[in-house]
Amino acid sequence: MKTKSLIIIPTYNEKENVERMIDTIVSLAKEFDVLFVDDNSPDGTADLIEKAIKKTPERIFIEKRTGKLGLGTAYIHGFKWSMDRNYDFVFEMDCDFSHDPEDLLRLRKELEKGCDLVIGSRYCRGGKVKNWPLKRIVMSYFASVYVRLILLISIKDTTAGFKGYRLEVLKKINLDAITFKGYAFQICMKYAVLRHGYKAKEIPITFVDRVHGDSKMSTGIFKEAFFGVWKMRHMKL
Image (cartoon, rainbow, N blue to C red; front, side, top):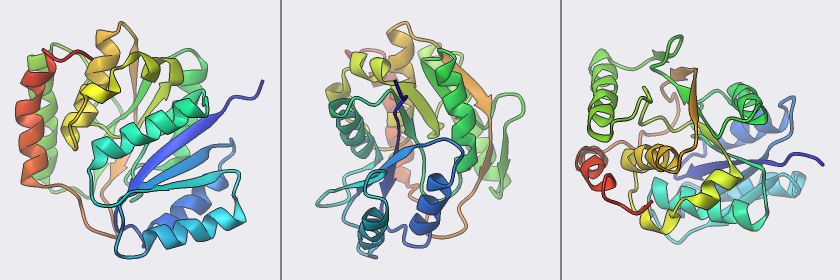
């Protein structure tokens, strides 16, 4: 039976990137479906996705939401969508090319070999970051150290947003309990996987800061992650 893979990509004002992202994914050596979860982008991102759907309706999908509801809720929406359609592997990635779509092939290979959660990691051996100012690299690195100390986990890139799951893993997690919207969501999902006794593996990637569009990073997202890790220890995941 053919293995079905789905990439979930949340979008908000990604008109400069979305068409090129679709073209790149469709041209990969292995077949991936793509679900865009668009939070009512005012720049017309959804229109460009719908244009692509007309060309490739069997591989490209969109779920349109009424407003900017946050990264975490977009992924959870996508996870539930993937469960309804019984995908085997489910991936998370950004639309801004900070994650290289070619690396999806490496992530998928690990899932095919039996890995439960595979993480495209900036901070494991061989991982790199390009085009970030030193201050942001240091802050991101030590944020992961902080998370590891609080949650007692060994994952080096705790806030990584480039990941692949086996569907059975997502089905075990209490997704409705996870209300975080930003980096805290990424941390919590990894923690939940480990709490259920599944195995996570990090593989090195080169993370490249976005060229087009605006970063979604904010002080609120940082604070949510900083304080949220304490809350995670007591959540029913």
